[in-house]
Image (cartoon, rainbow, N blue to C red; front, side):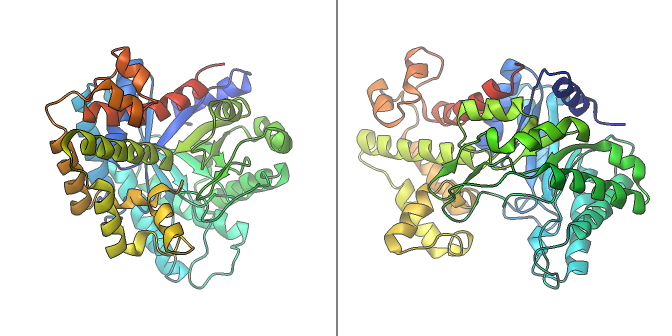
Length: 420
């Protein structure tokens, strides 16, 4: 039996009434709170996904296991007054990626333990991503191998489902998590033949793994629609090159899932949903917007108190602990500095959960506490939020402004996924 919510989305697309859902891929508490507040305010479901690198049985870069992340989100759900039934938990890129430096057997054993931990914790939307080569694998990995490994992880999920209906997403043309690592000019969309082959190979692999019935729970296929972002540019969606892929979706009987939709225009996002991409992943754009607002508040702090320090403190932290950016940001010292703070890939997001970064943000918020920020400074440093403040929809206070900055991006997705 297919998950009722995703089954409804598929039926709507098949009936020519396309709808979608934004997949919020972030572990930052303020991003999560903004998404949950929006869902509580406007109704409807909210899809929250944790990625394999953020959250896994070893803790990931957040230090959280799947059960920890699940509990954190539920605490926020109760705080904002959201009904638990509105919440869908997803696991993103579940596969050997965090351990791909190991031989395939060892990496897949770790991946199986991760999938089990996610399903045990209550995650029901499971993106099976076994597309990467491990230490002893050829590159690229044969698509049949990808399908076989995905089916083995689905078998683990089924054993741990406890009778709950899971929703699987599959795919072999999976964009790099977090965006490309170089300037991107154009991309070639997935061909219809490749999409059909991927679905058939997974069907056969599920059957060979003894879980043929579980293939009926597949709700989405990750394909490349021709969207991506690099460090300093965005490739916007153009329906023309994807015409063949779009036409093939109804025969596949599932949705397309679009990754790397961050920084797309509202028109482009609407076109994606119209063309069968019913699941739109967004992550770095949300923390990018949060970072913009934090840096703006740092400038406002300098104006109001004569003291700033957040950006300088984050620079010192990233220089001292370069592991999250050094291999990804090329160039001379000035170029790397710009990328550390302003790259669309937003690798600074890996640092916000560290004790030092948390203290820097706390210090900023303490400097601005117990005061309304003048509208003129909001106009100067947060101009996109100024109309909402003047209209009385957003309080001129630091925390409210941070949440509003994230919600502004979520609002773009909300407009795109609404019924046509």
